[in-house]
Image 1: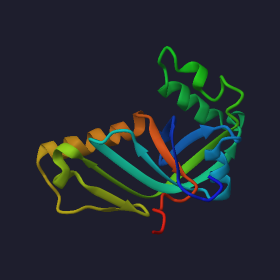
Image 2 (image 1 turned 120 degrees about the horizontal axis):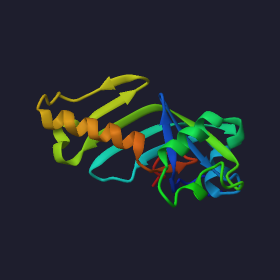
Image 3 (image 1 turned 45 degrees about the horizontal axis):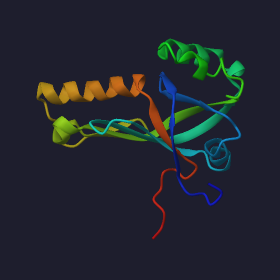
Length: 164
């Protein structure tokens, strides 16, 4: 959005280590917004296992410049119809971003009170810890979804709400 307003878009990506990698086409609104303001908010599509990460997207160049990332994407997206949408199969995908989290929060709807977790600059900030096995299972499930599920990105404004 030329105004700098938030722009939400579904994306494919892969987590390797502590970094989320996304890809796009430079001609898209998403990429133009990231070029102007690299702050992002990324979240899973689930309303039950919630992971929301704030960070900064770094332009790594073309997919050919990051073959390890392209290989990780191919290893993750192995469905019958996935191949044409991967960055090494479609030359229109001409930019890969690395999103390094600055803060994050997660919770599971089923165990909301005990599953809430927040991270800031590498430090876990958790409310009173629920030691029931269901809370641990919920947190583990959300972590797995973060590394394996599609996500959405709010690009170009750091996900800040517009001033009213």
